[in-house]
Image (cartoon, rainbow, N blue to C red; front, side):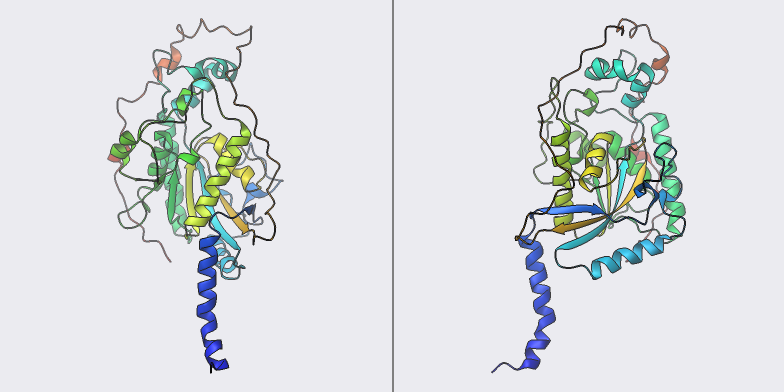
Length: 363
């Protein structure tokens, strides 16, 4: 005969077993994502997007500390029901690349209808996979200085790093985190195809092969990552609906396969917009090199009802290159020499970055 006492003693272990089983079988369950507000300025409608600077404590509200963030994250997860998980995600847009500088120099119209389909203008290259400019390199270094200044304030360091498979993203990540937490035995970044920029047409968004990335960084790759870029097409580009679903899939993967509660994602502007939309965040365009923390809540369905999406999504037709306005002249490109002063470094190698210090993150 089983005693009541033995049953009661077994309940904690049983609950743990049920929880583990739930997380396993619900690995790909429908889920709803939302941003927990009340922690960061970028979440507030009153915050002006154009004047916001992530260099101001990454947008942490003035009445809060980073210890408050760590404690609240732990408390939320400790008391969450089985179908709910919270993560602190640092979403970073890569620093300025040569494609960004070219678009600024030549103008958005000429860039979108013509230059984005080229690999350069004869003096400067921006495709495939544009490198960081010197300005971009410096802004990533400035991010590193900011992070190091926050560590003394009990800043919650990322425990996992996901990065788009483009050098401008990987260089930004490395220059930002190299001399703090990207140390042997701590965390190795993982290249994820799903967080690459909008796919198609733009040569700057045609990635290099896996072998190049492996030799340059020595980091990990998600399962089934192909050597060649099998997704990019020169004549058509994915629409916003496909981009949104791609962001959703990344969220599902990160939440369901990574037990860490503080995550770093370094990617691009368009996929970033899809990512923010997927978590129910307000529209918040990020400048090159910007980092914003997001306090994200995932609620899985219990198979009794479908989880509600954050917005209605329509998958549209693949887009094509827009026609250039008649008022634009492309004949001036060859004679433009000012932009040639922004030449690509012969072979800028982030592997030459010196490790200044290593931080052992707190539990």
